[in-house]
Image (cartoon, rainbow, N blue to C red):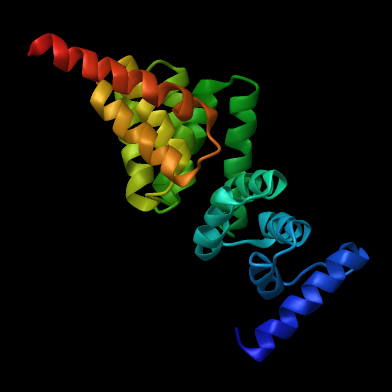
Length: 216
């Protein structure tokens, strides 16, 4: 670490410890440096700040904290990554996205589908819009369309554990057990905090072994 970064790290640690971070929010650079601080409270504060100001290039650094030793840091990391994934910096697109999320919340699925379709038309590089549309398709029972949108998410964001997990669930519903295990394992590799994959993968692997035993 350079002298400048060491100084920045010291400033961040002192600010959090003294409670002054609320009055003087961490800068983007300070928050990134603080992700490697030994103090879990400092790391969590950095993640909370990045949830508000973080950008897509910060995603890999935030994702690493999903395997942090501290449970609060892991929780903050998960919250931060969803916030980072869910914004583009374009006020018009982000406004549409918020509308779509609200439409999903109140079960206006047809309207939400139209909203997210408009976003992917206007900004096809925005992976989270594809993910939300995949979720809407799933809620509507359109598994094939949902899978296609999950694939679009993963082309743009290969570490999107939500799309990986969702794809795994759909493949399982469709009877594609081996593919389901593959996708769920990829999701768990990115985010070890996901309870669903951790519980179901061993069961599915045993099911596959049983099928192999029955065919030999």
